[in-house]
Image (tube, rainbow over all chains, first blue to last red; front, top):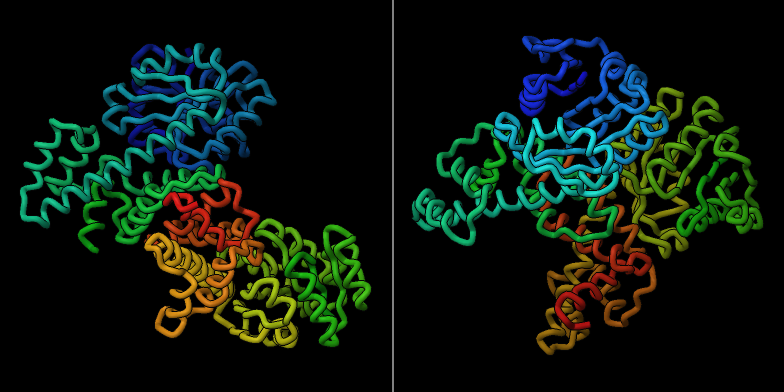
Length: 284
Length: 288
């Protein structure tokens, strides 16, 4: 199948390569030509040109505005994609923005799934991403074989935007857990206890979690190189709090965690790992 | 002075009236024509559009709901502006939005001043608002005679957007202030102590504040009529939190407060005064 891919960063590049290795004819476009260097793919000049040639197009880029621009802007996908083709947006953006883009594409007979992913760069490389999809079930059924090249757990959450709601929930839990791990590590250290031993002990009990495994380990080793760049979690928390506000749902814990992320950004640690929340606590 | 006034809601109407009473020649415009009637009866002239409200005037003032509304009326103002016009927005919007509107108007040759107010409907009627202005010296000086009809404490805070920064800071202090007083009263009550007596005692000490005095009394009276509606306070705190997010600024107290106001709006207390945060606390602690 002719498959388009836009957004060849730490997540997108391994994802695109999985699709290519599965035998698909990969087409790519990137704002910076350097991003597509060395890829076994047809390089397109604009998103519209890429859209014209592909049955399914994947995007995984940073912000709601970026996705809107690539999809609906001048020379955007909407100008090239043909009726019956499918956009699968794996970016993490506002549910509202996803619904808006899907509606605009829908007017032209182009289907869209919001299909944000969880699992980080390692999950993208290992093709073990969790994929949470919003959109029509029959559209998901059509692209499922492609998604199976990228991840194992593919869940149809609901209509358009529902995948992004699930991703927001994912981020709330995950980053709050990183904050909890950081506070525990900080308390252990301040009490003169070996953090590494605490982490090892906890890993066997009720507090065990993926976050404690991965981020806890980074905190113990004081290895703050990303992993997942904290600025992306900071961006996602902006989406979480905006969604909570729109629904009139209080999220007191997420609000506090967001402030710790603001402090993290102020320290210039946005490109470091979110395990840096430990360093924020050490400032206080 | 010849002044155009746009937006005749709870705040805008008494403000425009005070300008008429102050001897200014006022032209008004509001989306709904019937909102203009009390002003026309008082001697103001009706405009047919924001552009018309700007035309032939030295000063135009807007008092509307939110940033998109301000941007929209100011686009109209720019199209009707004559050289030397100063445009003043007294709504509460994000500092970044005010700065952008200021740049857009400057490109059209209009000097823009952001001048949000504090003091509520009571202050608007009495002409005792606090006015915090951002913009050029010249623009502020031109607007000052109008400000003097509307308020008492008139401060030129700084450049474009600075008025909105001051207003956001004001909403941090008032938002947390109302919550602090409500928590103190809930604390007293749960301990079996008369919250009214506690208020009385505290008024003499370092915890004294206008909020403890006025909002506190209304809490004791269980008078939740607005005043200042909690959904509007929530909107303003959202400006605070969004600005903090953009800047990388850690505001844990404001964040907690904003979530309480979020819960108020979500649970049907949005149309009540912001002191209804007391009801939320009571509900959470089984005191309701």
